[in-house]
Length: 158
Picture 1: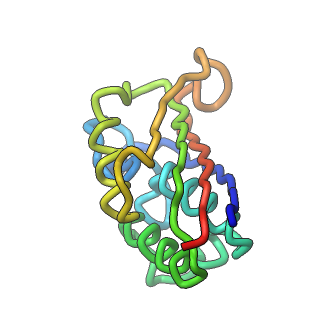
Picture 2: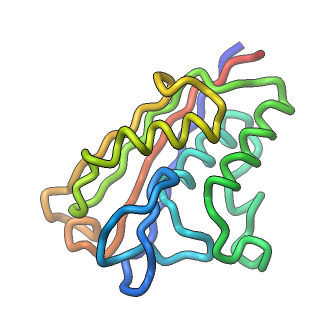
């Protein structure tokens, strides 16, 4: 049995925060604002997995009103979501993540992003796709007001 889910997340770019995407810190002058480390890519992936399991969304499981999640490393959230996935008798078939940002350029970071996610999920790196795009300077991402990410995850019964 197969299940598919999709996720999407957005966070505002601000000064004074580190930029975390797909579980790694990028060298950039701006970071994403959020209750956790604001890793939009991991948040989108969590929502995709939770959606495939019909278990709601990341905000349901890790509300921003709960002080336990203040500043939390999103890799911990993903690990928790993956445990829920295994508890339901599923494992990741593959996932595909798209990060939308004008800057920084993601290409140099993508191999590390894929490897980091594979380690957290406990799956071969070939099951993880990470891509990046811009909006050609259009919209909030084009004006560098924020970064968005979308993800699709295919799960299959263990």
